[in-house]
Length: 321
Image 1: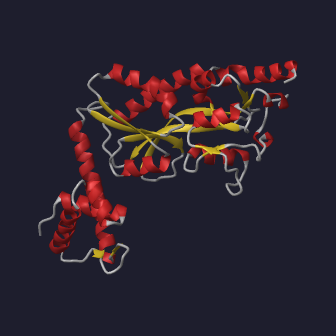
Image 2: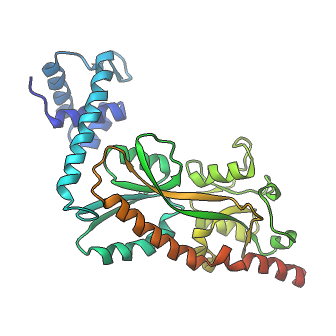
Image 3: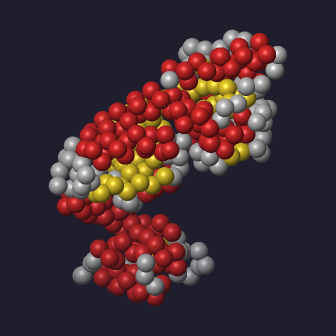
């Protein structure tokens, strides 16, 4: 019996994609070459792994058992590869994933800190929504990811970085409707604007406001800056994380940001890695650095948005807007 890591990787690509063509594309090989390796794997094991009679690819019973074991083998191989490329601690090469509602606000503070810590660190950054980051993390294409916690994934190790309060974003004209600090119950469901499905910020907003996903407005945005431009122009209201204010308020002079009454809602942002990945101190070092960067980003936003939203409301009332 002669088994190879190439066969294992091709087989797991096939399991992941459910299609010979897409698996070959993922592995950067031709489809015939991938098919040959899969048949050689089956021959070496003396068992059929793939049902080929249907148009839709399916694993056999033994194929599912082999896939589970191969996944563990490849996870250990990735751990060895990590160990080889890391001289120790936060060094060598690091590939970090970050969700879109954090990346543009945290990275400008984090990247200089990483560069100052180790000029030789090879850093790769991937910005994507949480499900994609978790998938890439499990596949070994990421070393760690910055997401909202809890992840709900038992195979990930979590390290909380900071709490990010939510504030209510409205236009300066609409700010006059709020004479007192708002509560989530004051958010008008008919006026609530959201990001596209898949953004964890959308799920958090609906949960905070006690709203169901069904029957929501079709007016959505692919990014937080676009969403806030809509709010600024009077198309509705939304919840904005304080982390974003240092950047977004400067670009939206007609945006009012109102702190919620206590207890104010917030999200917890954290760093995650695979539980089986090798950790020689790099994870704690990275978490500490990102937490430092977050403190700087939150300081840029000022205390609870620097109180600007409340001032906007007072200005709107005094000017009769």
